[in-house]
Image (cartoon, rainbow over all chains, first blue to last red; front, side):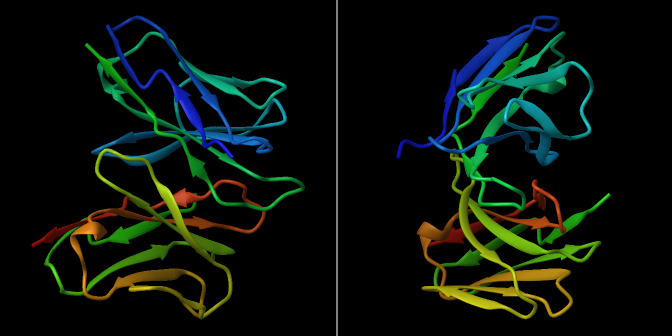
Length: 115
Length: 111
């Protein structure tokens, strides 16, 4: 099976702009989670989507949003970018059906730099 | 909310020395997962522990889950340069779909 793919891999934006990142999960995986990774804060959970519904949400401002499509592909959007949004954004998919956690399979990430 | 603390933050070792990272949760966990992230890479799942007092081995890696299911450790025997990376623990509570990650321990192995 192909792994989790994320596009783009690298992105440079300026403050105030918005950005959309894309994630394609492993075939058959219905749960997609997004994480922000920075050297200072480690891996921070943004949100999780399951069957096109946001099921869990981390402690991030409303500028961070996401969605999931019927084919389980997911996008996350960050509006009004700030310098502090520079980070590696990781997407992870898992095979969660009726409940309970499963292994998180991470994609290679999108490296976002905000200037 | 649930917190997962991981120590140490960094560990320098000479090749051949042992290494241990510790993970402690503020709440009882249903299970705990361990991941490894190589420099420039993404986290990769290593193992999941579910039972109280469980010990699992993967070659030179030994994973333990505490009796109270609130702590865990990863021990590497005779480190090699290929062990370099950041090791994360991730704890889950009952009914939770999303693991809470520790801050990770970065292992640096000097040849």
